Amino acid sequence: KWDLVVTKPAEKSLSKFPAKDKAKIQLALLEMRENPFAGDIARLKAQPTAWRRRVGNYRILYDILPEQLRIVITGIARRTSTTY
Image (cartoon, rainbow, N blue to C red; front, side):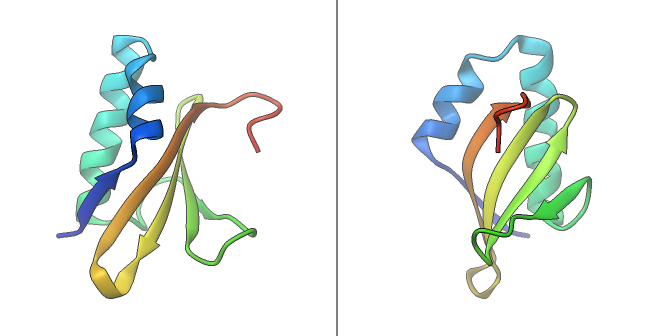
């Protein structure tokens, strides 16, 4: 099982989302603890450890640290034309 660390900025943005969307995102976070490579994910080109997971109109941005079995959630944002 992977260790999940949510940064303060990610927590803050999650708290602002509607309850229905927040529940979907929280479910995705729980699933990521079992396997961070499952779901609709893609590696981000900027950093070798950076990934994103798509959850509806939202994107979970995270780093995978395999040597520590740790996932660091760096951001959660609603997808717009300027998200990336």
